[in-house]
Image (cartoon, rainbow, N blue to C red; front, side, top):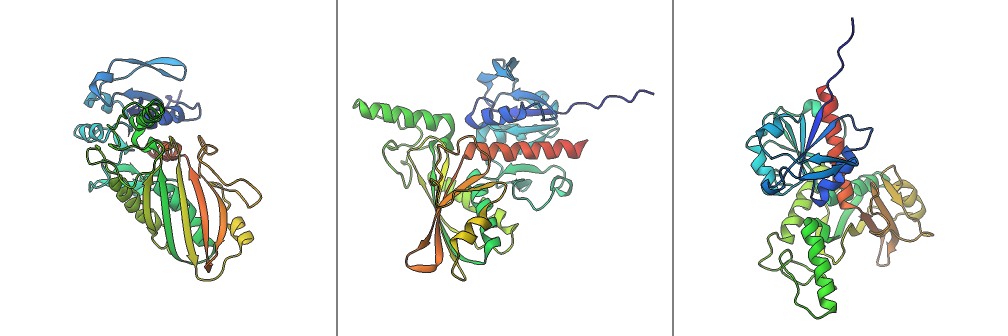
Length: 340
């Protein structure tokens, strides 16, 4: 008797034209990912248009119950509004939210496979929304988990420098236009930041900005608290986020105080892991250009605090778009495997 061939699962992707959506699409299109990819429009105007997928033309489907019902798992990488709109008729697919729109819903379960203590899909309730943790929170939790394994930590302070890619293509385009216009003495577009970001640092956006930097800081802070709760004895950091005039990649200046004086050589060895590239004192410190497209995080510039022998400074860089996309695709792979 011939055994029937197993059905190939389908993964839907809402918002393939966004910055994050393109990164997710590239990962899902890899030959080793065991699913068909279905592209779904985040906005009605995108529906019916053609795009490229694995070198072949592909149609972007309308965001409706029919499109979602044909997807076993659906990743939402469009706008928060499109995610919330889709949830009204997404009962037949398993949602994976990369937009943070669902963070406060009771059905939401924060996901970050790079940090989870074990396989979660089997123990999560039916109907759970898989909300991907903010990539800055994932980056910090990866580092602090490894740091706490070296020796007990008393206190942590983090200054996070956010890139324009935090606001997707609109943020990138506004920073580019501001830089170009400044050099030729033209007025500056301010639809995204409502402030001059080019050649500047922002503690907060202008009053007319559609999203606030404080809201981003709150998301990172809340997600980090959850991720660190999985790790045990890691104290919650004091976190401050500043908008930097860079296109891609988060940078972090982190200060940590231990119970006893650290040894830098031992510390560098303890930090090295599969997802942490440690740049020792003989190497150039990490930077966001070097980590573009790379998985995990890069750590360097490690130095003792001149006024506190128990404390150290660290410089950390990570590709935020890649980090979010990889964790989302890892969740999709788990869910497909669990359903088989």
